[in-house]
Length: 206
Image 1 (cartoon, rainbow, N blue to C red):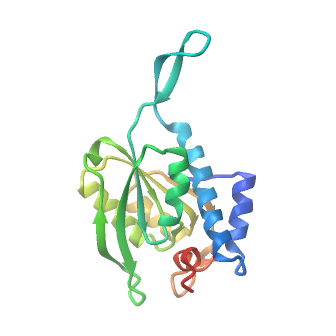
Image 2: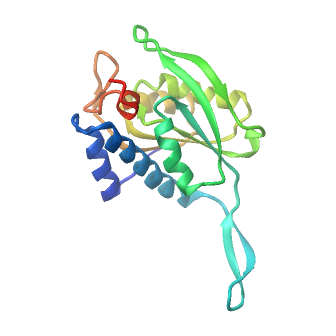
């Protein structure tokens, strides 16, 4: 299932990201802002439980989140979304999966993985700005499944139809949330119109 999130502020930040002359500091801030907005939207489906609290006036019933969360970032570009996600879920643990794309075959190569313990009992939110071919994202999701994760959500900022198709075929039970579904991939497997290489633009390594 794919959900494209519509929000005027989110779209404004996305436009900043797409502009080729946007400097890295503004690009990074836009990534962080969008991650925050998207977590808020996704949170509409989170579980809550009722508790009793005491206000300065009286006791009353209230609700709190009833799930433990893990934010998993796909290195390196996904790092730009972590701080935004933690603004909404400050108690979440953070996991890291390092994958690099072979520029010839466009296949993912794993080079690092560090995940919190007991991931099978937690809601896992995977963040990565770009869903292009879907190869790296699908590989990361499979790695999480292999480690026991059962409740997984995938959040990206920009997606291509090819990547959505890949994830939907490989992991049909995992919902995809995106801020924009772009047109297609070019011959170099970059999203069109896209925004270029998100990692390079976040960390100013162009």
